Length: 189
Image (tube, rainbow, N blue to C red; front, side, top):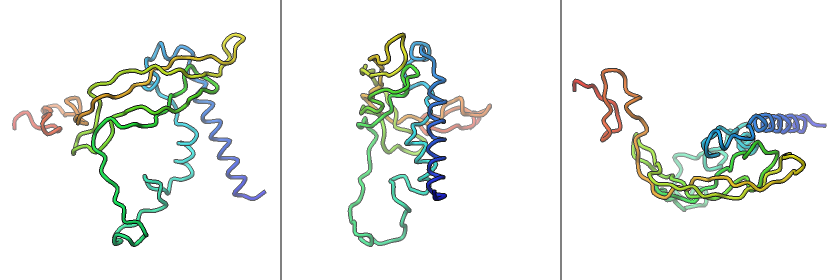
């Protein structure tokens, strides 16, 4: 067996152990105790963890490496990517791990979330949202049953706007927060 195959087996085994260990720590009553599933701490999925560990040399758009200083068309593609404005866009989100399940389906759903270009010192954030309740098939030992259908609340953003990343609590003593500039400034000036 080659060293590369052995390394891949070890990496996959570690991923599975990492995911299983984190997911078994979530208590059955976590939804009732901790609120909506997307507000709870859930370990990254196997795919996300594997991508960070194994594909870390790839850029944010999945390219092997970024090419700077090249003329348009040097790489056979003249298409420019349009800027995405701050708005509620359909996004794929993880359902999380409802009820500490062994498996659950669907594990990812499409919902509208606020995302897009923001101004300096701001972020694109929801100002209005609602919760949609989705049925999720959960495989877990519940008495003598193994599969149950549970209802999981998923937040869907309806309206977005720019909000300051920082707030008054980020200012030092002797400073006040200027919301028009999204920055702290001296109380004296």
